[in-house]
Length: 291
Image (cartoon, rainbow, N blue to C red; front, side):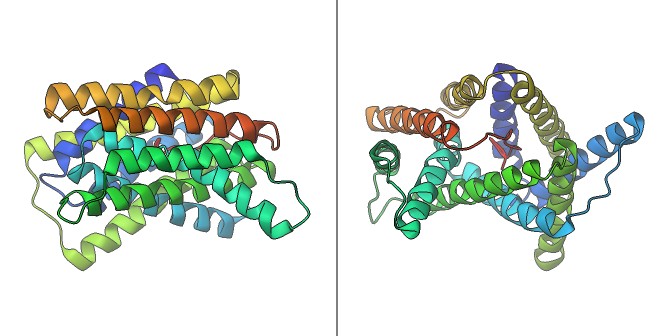
């Protein structure tokens, strides 16, 4: 999980550099090609099957996951790397909020005050990071990053549903990657494609390889380790991204941003712990960290 978090943060660096040459849709397209080809080859070598009895479930899971991934890549291009990653990791807090909403709708269900506390702490962290002001030119990218975390939460819930009916992780990853190829291709048809350079191609290849290897490592970690430990170690990705941002992009270090990140990490770990007591856990298929 530690290595997976490092690779996802490194992928974020490549996405940030690649965003100078390509749109977020193009990056999603090429990331999806690498992932789909890699997973397809592995399944073929091992004699598995990509045929699924629930294509509609994969469609909706891929739709939410690809949207989350596209918005996250867009946010990375306009925000400090650690900030973009932290907002994407808000997915655990969003899931806690969904649980609260479900409890309220059910009426008779007991509302856990600890979940309310985690949600409030998470959004307090967001307020500290974004510090919304009228003339803050990064506010739009921050809101996009926040929405990417919400969509990631819905994608995780759909992965849970797929896991409960017995769909293997590799099949979920494959159709998610395939969804990225389709969505990216549509974006390129509508808005055109940027010309390639040697540096640009190298960055796109790095994004695809890093994301696919990190995803496989994460799946392995959740399959063999303890869920809460893995979920906690996953937040090391924010630390790695913070170091990358300071060293490579000279991102500013402010006490409010650091405090906001700490609040979101604490809220995410607490939300994961509380959810693990009420529902069976399924390895998340990540952006992100990958949706």
